[in-house]
Length: 226
Ligand code: HEM
Image 1 (cartoon, rainbow, N blue to C red):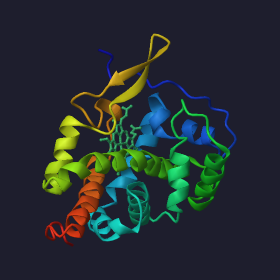
Image 2 (cartoon, rainbow, N blue to C red):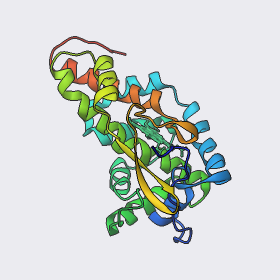
Image 3 (cartoon, rainbow, N blue to C red):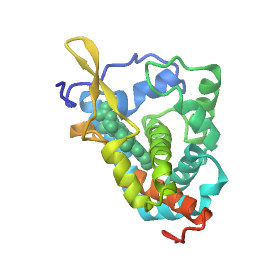
């Protein structure tokens, strides 16, 4: 089996500043070697200043304000102090991965995000990268857990079961012998090794907050009230 320690497929480095291509070329997720190390530490430092418990409480209270992706982004961006519009994050996130051709809407949304996050720089890319990484994956975690909560499971149990049996991210990509290969993440829903997701506690907190609100909406008790 291919090791998760293999390099990620490289992305072109010549996108215009502020474009989707620029973002991919500037975030840790699609970087290798010392660039990966340096950019990853920017993301890790920012996340370290965000309390998962604050995310859980805010996700709980804001859960009714939109769909799962928007709520996740609103709450995380708020705690990171980033004045972004959630719908711009959702639109740009759909074009984040290098195998997707960005739409004009995604480029425009990303342009607004770059402006809101301080202009094109490695730090801005790290800020936006956190929101991109959180957006669909955490909404997927929530979506897969909803039927379990509706069937009576507690949010924490439902999230744990989804991570064990039905994780939202099943594969990642690596470059091996010049070929791009899909690597299954069986048993490691947050990845492993030097590129392991730095946000499991934050993701689980956001998901349990939203799912606790779902229980309350259904009159099943105020589990997780803040
Ligand atoms: C608050 C929510 C989240 C944040 C802020 C976040 C952040 C990140 C970041 C910054 C990376 C890149 C790490 C690097 O470049 O070294 C990453 C990687 C990863 N994330 Fe997350 N993430 C979140 C939620 C999730 C969720 C819900 C899952 C799935 C259960 C997930 C699975 C992964 C995986 C598998 C990788 C590694 C990909 C690889 O090795 O190729 N993340 N995450």
